[in-house]
Amino acid sequence: MLVRDAMSTMVLTIGPAHTLRQAARLMSARHVGAAIVLDCDTSGPGILTERDLLNSVGAGQDPDLETVCSHTTTDVVFASPSWTLEDAADAMAHGGFRHLIVLDERGEPVGVVSVRDIIRCWAPSRRHPASLAG
Image (cartoon, rainbow, N blue to C red; front, side):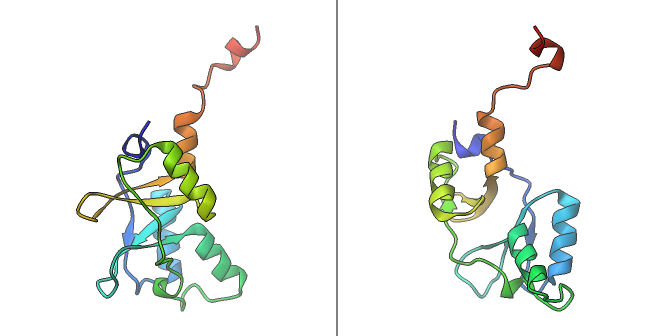
């Protein structure tokens, strides 16, 4: 199975000037654990994850004053839609992260693939509890 088969194509994009509270609200409303950060002053997209938000709040920083640009990961590993899920899982395991931005052949973001997406594809179909009894 390929990344294109598992990735979410409805991604959240935010700007670097958003506050962390704004980013958290948007991520919560969309039920996503990561947002793609687009900044015309950088060479490519970055990513803000729920872990970044947690680390900031845990450090006592004010989410109404902290901006996304101060917490964005810009040294990002990108995936291709044609990668296998094994390739994506290996990249995540070796890099210690749970999300990959997926770029098309022009270098434009077309999706995000997460550990959850990969597990959903690899896990056996859930059977009805009654079918497990016997």
